[in-house]
Length: 148
View 1 (cartoon, rainbow, N blue to C red):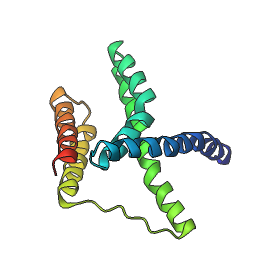
View 2: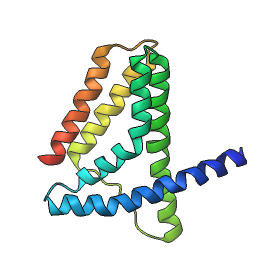
View 3: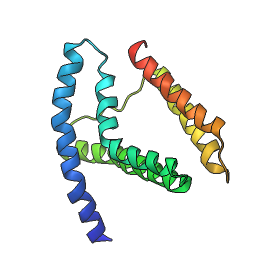
């Protein structure tokens, strides 16, 4: 278990460092174009999830839906599930304050997304309507980035 944890950190470090380097350029571009600051985070997240997203799309096109779902869930777990604990840990080590605050609209969207995940993943089978609700929530989030 210790070896796997070390390998995880070893292989995660270049991704984090490259993301940090890319964030400087993306933040500059976002500021130069007078776009919302949250868009930079969305672009970085999209870059980090790009490889897994392509693999999931390829698996889905080959009618290997279980593999596509496993790739997406694994990617989300590793990216989202490890990001918050890593940021909080770094904040504790460095003594820097960490603000994970959300405005009320974002809190409602997060709650709706979590409830939708419970409905989607709790059952034995999912359907297109549940996936469509996930997409609608994502589009609503993107729309609210530009017009809060």
